[in-house]
Length: 297
Length: 297
Image: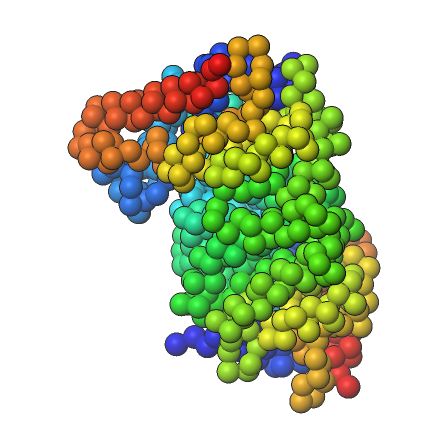
């Protein structure tokens, strides 16, 4: 019997002693040529992704494939994303599928099956979803997560420059994102683990540390999925602003790094697989260590 | 040279004299057995979809495949959705891909390529997107739509029971969905056709006719994509509440029917392809006629 997702996630963070989550973002024009030409061969994307996962699994326990960047390669890219989820599982990693889905009733059930369900689904451990359409549209994901010990990460406060356009609109003295957090808070109980953390995660952009603290207040049990660290400009300290004191430091979620650990300058300059692997290994070790330091008291 | 999406859409509505848009929603347990067993054979989904499209093309000019219901069949389902978009194009139909995507920067570009872009993309004419993450996350879709004469349909006011959870939060005397509409209104200029309609569409749930009228006020040029008619309970009159007087009646978008025209009782009871086809043909003819009547003065 699998443990609740929240317990599996926090156990993995504790084991690696870092909240690092490696983002898997395939860009055709950045994948080194020795993997093949990703522009017209999805095998290159598969090889690149598998190689990244093999290195990532040594530094942290969580992988976040960005589904949109696989879908740009069509159905073969979609298939490659699923194969890479399998590969990450085989390497012992937890997979948070970044799909940002959201739809009504039966369609939401379809997306829940597609992302969290077993083959032909991705069998991901957690999926990102968009709350704009309302609580009933999240329900099929939470129901499946509850039944299968999986997680659901709801976009609350995102990390992009325009995040505030809708999320910061003021509703009775508080922004929309805070109202969304308040709406979700009672639901966190349904995915609560023995760790007292919930697998109903909140996406809390690292580029807005103040908001992360307010979000923690509104959702004390929610594990955070924090994007925006590294390439998007947020520091390790900003990234863990919503974490809380635990036995040995700060905890409360995972911090994603995608471009920073997948396409560092040294890796882009590498002309051999060995040089590339060493550069990726260095970048991941550094990100893991930075986040370890930021969560150690 | 293709005409702007808005002009192509409204011309199609005028030609068929009905705003009907047929929704393509594959449910494994509702696809008749004579197409095959959709539970473990996506060929059945392909055959069912192609047969529906062949009938739909006689009654209206617009098809809306619901991508989530294809994704539940894995990468093969994803591929079938793309093939059916091709088939609809071959039958002269306009395809609005209901994907409800939304993500930041480069990922949004990936989704825009995946949905609107040529093979390996879906080459859809229009795609539905979610505005929660802000205007910058819609930009890659609008940019591609502007360049390629395509459309973008933004979720503004959806048709589901919980739509109000976020969309109805009050922001300075107006709901969030109205603020979203006001944010989008200036952008409609970018996809404006010679018809004076814009391919920056607004999703305006038929189950909320009052809201549709207010939305029309905020976005006078936006073509509406109206879900919720038929199986979701809204009448034809409700569905066209946001339409405006044109030369010969009311116009301003398309009204989707999925379950009502794909799984009517008579079709579910059919045991032969001929009986099924006749039942689907009747249901589509009736929906087209009902909406024709509702838009005729």
